[in-house]
Length: 122
Figure (cartoon, rainbow, N blue to C red):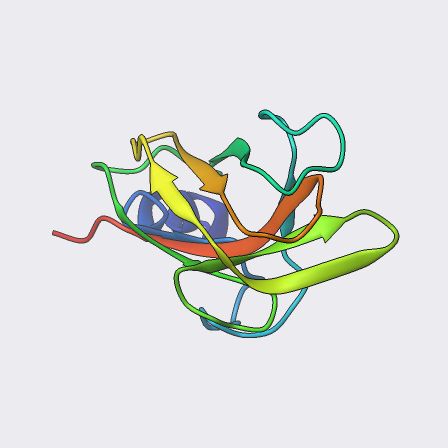
Protein backbone atom coordinates (compact mmCIF):
# COMPACT_ATOMS: atom_id res chain seq x y z
CA UNK A 1 0.00 0.00 0.00
CA UNK A 2 1.42 3.45 -0.84
CA UNK A 3 2.68 5.51 2.12
CA UNK A 4 0.18 8.37 1.59
CA UNK A 5 -2.82 6.00 1.51
CA UNK A 6 -1.63 4.20 4.65
CA UNK A 7 -1.00 7.53 6.42
CA UNK A 8 -4.49 8.81 5.62
CA UNK A 9 -6.10 5.58 6.86
CA UNK A 10 -4.08 5.63 10.09
CA UNK A 11 -4.83 9.33 10.59
CA UNK A 12 -8.50 8.52 11.03
CA UNK A 13 -7.47 7.03 14.41
CA UNK A 14 -4.58 9.24 15.56
CA UNK A 15 -3.23 12.67 14.59
CA UNK A 16 -0.89 15.21 16.12
CA UNK A 17 0.38 18.67 15.36
CA UNK A 18 3.98 17.60 15.90
CA UNK A 19 6.31 16.58 13.09
CA UNK A 20 6.43 12.88 12.17
CA UNK A 21 8.47 10.95 14.76
CA UNK A 22 8.09 13.59 17.50
CA UNK A 23 6.18 12.59 20.63
CA UNK A 24 3.44 14.65 22.34
CA UNK A 25 4.71 17.01 25.03
CA UNK A 26 7.95 17.79 23.21
CA UNK A 27 9.06 21.43 23.24
CA UNK A 28 8.96 22.43 19.59
CA UNK A 29 7.35 25.24 17.62
CA UNK A 30 3.57 25.17 17.94
CA UNK A 31 0.52 26.22 16.03
CA UNK A 32 -0.72 29.78 16.30
CA UNK A 33 -4.34 30.72 16.01
CA UNK A 34 -6.18 34.00 16.28
CA UNK A 35 -9.21 33.30 14.11
CA UNK A 36 -11.48 33.82 17.10
CA UNK A 37 -12.17 36.75 19.39
CA UNK A 38 -8.74 38.38 19.73
CA UNK A 39 -8.28 40.93 16.98
CA UNK A 40 -5.69 42.76 19.10
CA UNK A 41 -3.79 42.28 22.37
CA UNK A 42 -5.95 41.27 25.33
CA UNK A 43 -5.59 39.88 28.85
CA UNK A 44 -9.08 38.40 28.52
CA UNK A 45 -10.32 35.38 26.52
CA UNK A 46 -8.77 34.35 23.22
CA UNK A 47 -10.78 31.84 21.18
CA UNK A 48 -10.20 29.98 17.96
CA UNK A 49 -10.34 26.55 16.36
CA UNK A 50 -7.98 24.00 14.89
CA UNK A 51 -8.76 21.54 12.10
CA UNK A 52 -7.32 18.06 11.75
CA UNK A 53 -5.43 17.21 8.58
CA UNK A 54 -7.80 14.27 7.93
CA UNK A 55 -11.33 13.56 9.19
CA UNK A 56 -11.19 11.40 12.32
CA UNK A 57 -13.09 8.10 12.66
CA UNK A 58 -15.03 9.47 15.66
CA UNK A 59 -14.73 12.49 17.96
CA UNK A 60 -11.27 11.94 19.48
CA UNK A 61 -9.77 12.48 22.90
CA UNK A 62 -7.66 15.63 22.42
CA UNK A 63 -4.62 16.43 24.58
CA UNK A 64 -3.06 19.90 24.44
CA UNK A 65 0.47 21.07 25.27
CA UNK A 66 2.04 24.50 25.57
CA UNK A 67 5.37 25.36 23.92
CA UNK A 68 7.42 24.00 26.84
CA UNK A 69 5.49 20.71 27.06
CA UNK A 70 3.01 21.41 29.90
CA UNK A 71 -0.07 19.23 29.45
CA UNK A 72 -3.55 20.83 29.27
CA UNK A 73 -1.98 24.30 28.95
CA UNK A 74 -1.20 26.71 26.12
CA UNK A 75 1.22 29.53 25.42
CA UNK A 76 -0.26 32.99 24.85
CA UNK A 77 1.62 34.85 22.15
CA UNK A 78 2.19 38.55 21.69
CA UNK A 79 3.48 38.30 18.09
CA UNK A 80 7.08 39.38 17.54
CA UNK A 81 7.39 40.41 21.21
CA UNK A 82 6.79 37.76 23.88
CA UNK A 83 5.32 34.37 24.73
CA UNK A 84 3.87 33.37 28.10
CA UNK A 85 3.71 29.62 28.80
CA UNK A 86 1.61 27.55 31.24
CA UNK A 87 -1.63 29.47 30.53
CA UNK A 88 -5.18 28.18 31.07
CA UNK A 89 -6.75 26.39 28.09
CA UNK A 90 -10.20 24.94 27.43
CA UNK A 91 -10.97 22.54 24.59
CA UNK A 92 -14.57 22.52 23.37
CA UNK A 93 -16.76 21.34 20.53
CA UNK A 94 -14.46 18.40 19.79
CA UNK A 95 -15.63 16.79 16.54
CA UNK A 96 -14.32 14.62 13.75
CA UNK A 97 -13.00 17.57 11.69
CA UNK A 98 -11.90 20.18 14.25
CA UNK A 99 -12.11 21.46 17.83
CA UNK A 100 -12.45 24.79 19.58
CA UNK A 101 -9.90 26.36 21.91
CA UNK A 102 -10.20 29.15 24.47
CA UNK A 103 -7.50 30.63 26.68
CA UNK A 104 -8.35 32.74 29.68
CA UNK A 105 -4.79 33.27 30.89
CA UNK A 106 -3.56 36.54 32.39
CA UNK A 107 -0.84 37.33 29.84
CA UNK A 108 -1.40 40.16 27.36
CA UNK A 109 -1.58 38.35 24.00
CA UNK A 110 -3.26 38.15 20.59
CA UNK A 111 -3.14 34.43 19.84
CA UNK A 112 -2.73 30.93 21.23
CA UNK A 113 0.39 28.84 20.56
CA UNK A 114 0.06 25.11 21.27
CA UNK A 115 0.40 21.52 20.11
CA UNK A 116 -2.14 18.71 20.29
CA UNK A 117 -2.65 14.98 19.91
CA UNK A 118 -6.03 13.54 18.84
CA UNK A 119 -6.80 9.88 19.52
CA UNK A 120 -9.95 8.03 18.36
CA UNK A 121 -8.67 4.47 18.66
CA UNK A 122 -11.25 1.70 18.91
